[in-house]
Length: 64
Image 1: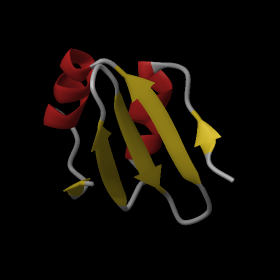
Image 2: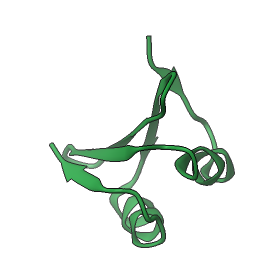
Image 3: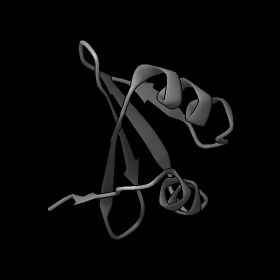
């Protein structure tokens, strides 16, 4: 089962140990999915915040 992240700070901590980030864009919502060796983490946010977060990460980004 995926675990949902509630804050941007937690997202930035987890992205350091993630192997990839999948991005699912909906109408007014963006889901960011981080795959780590043991879990899948999801973070729901608005498109502006998602673009800001994605600009600063170094893992491969896959648009779904």
